[in-house]
Amino acid sequence: MKKYLVISFLLIINCGIGSESTEIVGVEDGVQNIKESSSSKTIEYPPDFDIYELFECLSDNNISRIPEPKFLDNAIIIEFDDGYSTDYIEDFADASSTCESSFKNLNNKASEIEVTGNSTNTNIEINKENECKKGFYSQRPNPVKEDDSFFYYEFYWQGSQKICYNFYEPEIIDDEWEVRVKNLIDNLGEKLGIYTPINLALVDQVKASSETLNQINIDDCKIYNFITDDNEIQNCAQNADDWGNRFAAAGVDWYGLPNGGNIALFVDNWENMGYETAIKIFVHEYFHVHQNGLVYYFEDEDLFGTPKAWLNDPEGTIFNDNPDRSYLFPNWIEEGGAEFAAPILAAQFDKSIDARRFFIESLDEARNVIEVAASNGDTVSLENYEFAGGLYESYDNPNNGIPREFAYQYTGGQWAHIFLHSLDSSNYQKLMITFYQNWSENESINPGNGWKVTFEELFNMPVEEFYIMFDNFMLKDREEQLSILPSNSELQNLTFSK
Image 1 (spheres, rainbow, N blue to C red):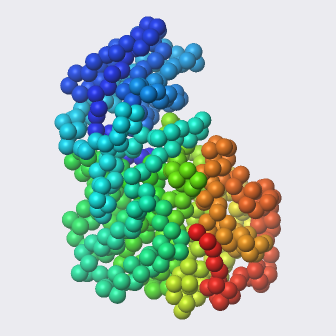
Image 2 (cartoon, one colour):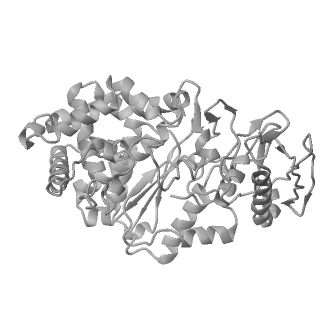
């Protein structure tokens, strides 16, 4: 999904092109005035300029292969080696001017923003009081350090992160459910931890006023897209998904990480699906903020990290519409992991909830995907759901051109977790916590392969071997498959250490 981007402030940029060394060029009316030269090799920015927001805009203008910036004490340098043609450098300069010109109206707002930091790292911090429904940064802060593959950040909210409960039009929401949601999410925060600030929204998306629903869109655009311009905020809000049929959702986006995570829950989750399913759904969504809040955290250094490749070329990596691999971790781990945790933690929250029922229903759905596919000459493998599940569920299915039944990344992914747990009970800790803890460290050493390295270290087998084992397991008789599923009592007594 393409990120909605606008630079939320504009610093005066000293940027230019010289014949053999960098020439400093002035700025007129808040717009970068770049002199072009066919022999240009470097462009220089002040040390407090947020280069990555510019890179996002350049990417939107079809400028790819952007060189990695060099952070010096007194400047940020973009250096073009012999691999970059004169045309590319000129296109880069033109697009840079276009980006900065498009943001010129925001220059007048710069004086209203609190700026803190030092000569080498200026962060735009806007929420020192830890208020709800408000971002912490008006733009992505600069990293405090870097290595070959990662940028590292220290956010000022670390150590004070909390969950904000934003109940919109609470007068039309059952008081019982307001209390229940808060108790459940508090319970999950205690069990799993809170790694980033979280804004939770609970609303009746059918009965709430259009003004309220639009305000939710506005809040999200301000916080997670780093937008401050009123026109841009309204444009972002108007392009949000239609209300009325939204599904519960949650996560911590890698780009919006400085402003934490969000959870969206709806009254129709329990009105249409019932109590037990609603609780399971809410746990599933919290687990997503757990996964994606923990995965970027370097525990030993107390820093968060982001892969350089994603920031330098988001459209070619993490936002790639036609990916050739998983950049974070597979869909079957993300969705299957949340589906694995949800019935267990729901039953531990309320022992009247039948966790096994959810697992059995998922098994039957997964078996149906496999059986229908087999009847059409198609063989289902968990590997198909690393990143290309949608491909196999379309008429582009490379096996036979017939769309599969949906959601195997959820159901098959859930049972892949159960299968791993059945191999060794200590895997529960790894599936709930350790995999996500270890991802960032392994990704920094093995760019692009962090999840595979983590999986193979934790479970002592190549992931390809696991796929074969699990695919074979999913072809067994249902009774044999169910034999590895713990009892409700056993599920309620599973424990891990956060």
